[in-house]
Image 1 (cartoon, rainbow, N blue to C red):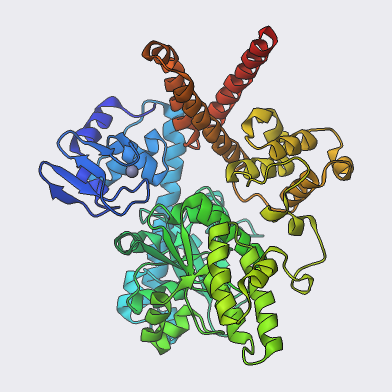
Image 2 (image 1 turned 180 degrees about the vertical axis):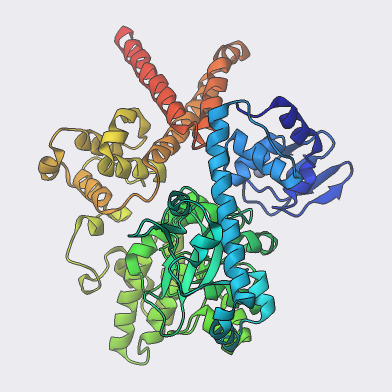
Length: 601
Ligand SMILES: [Zn+2]
């Protein structure tokens, strides 16, 4: 495993599980135990229980159990060694490694982290007292950034020089480059990546600096924002600015506010909303959602979510489904951003966040606000436009509730409104493309039962289409429970299928077309693993259904356990691929067994 046994034991003994858990959820003492809301499943009454003396937790709701290392692995998405390091860090224990290469890789990371910390200090000290930073200090004061804020966010200044940081750090250019702080200049000497910019250090969840966002000064060099390029420590599609400071408040409020810029986060904190984070120069990704929903299920978007339109809508609904989240939109006045609003009118910002609406409701409100509901034509148009938006929501119950509400507001008969929702008016839509006819209602006839394709299977299809080389060897027809999806699978695993796409049934074409135009924003192997998760779940359910005698059940127990272990491994980045391959192998053998069964019958 790599960690010295003595150190591992010390971490285990010294860790206080209740203390670790209460960093994520509020715990209350109930008798000998601690009790709180489970961080692993959504619930309203506490069923998560911690036995601090034994150092074990158990959830009566979702049956999750384990020790502090398991807890940290799950909640921080770390591997075993990472979780032990996380705990050791918290206790101030220095860890020794048994495996030299393991130690080297981790030592390199450690070096980068130290370099980034030094850089953050350098930028911060330069802003506080550097002679070159006078203009920057007065600029920031003018924008309402008092010294307390500068301290709290460790805001800094990168001097207007080629190598101010490089000569301060005095390390080879290769190290600077690995940390995203600089590179070799044309004359061979190292030069800085950031120059003449206000610097916002970006930290990981635990507060270690992983990169920077540099904002230009008025009349400074373009572009407005410059971010650390991708490094071993910094991946913009995974990091959220401010989360290490916000997480405590996020958990308390069970709500996280997502902004677009560093200054928006600072503004929110100053306006009394210390549960704000920002993406670092990128659109929200699936990984961001995964990260956020570890801390809160209610996500409030504090930027122009409407501007992104249907593409964003599809993603939001998918995320709500996949991550069990609720996406709300704060009513930030058009043209304003949270940072400005915090400065001009903090109460208005508070109010915009407090009165955030569910995403669908927000979009409908915008349509209705812009319509002339006093006139018949205006109401008809509003009905059509709102209908098209409602039609995009994947859940029928949700669609129905909104259509009733809108029908009343625009004074249209409910049945008529229902027709508008099922068939959006062409004027609102792009020319007919596969994605249009792929709305779940239209997948009917042609012998297919009218049923929605489970999310995991839809994602697997997408992964197959976009990453066929990686995913095809790991996919079997039995990973799909839906006949339509099975047929789509057979199509997309045929050589030259793109040319044959029109020769199959419309429902299959439609589905594959949809998969073709929808991007995959997650690791393909992970998508395979989620589909396998569902297969294993089904297998377990069927087993329980089929097996009547306890003896039979016992016979299957080793397999149940083996699968459970692979499932566990599929949840960790380091062990996923091997576990996926193992489960696929098992699934393939199952198929052979079934085929033999059938022939002997
Ligand atoms: Zn639970």
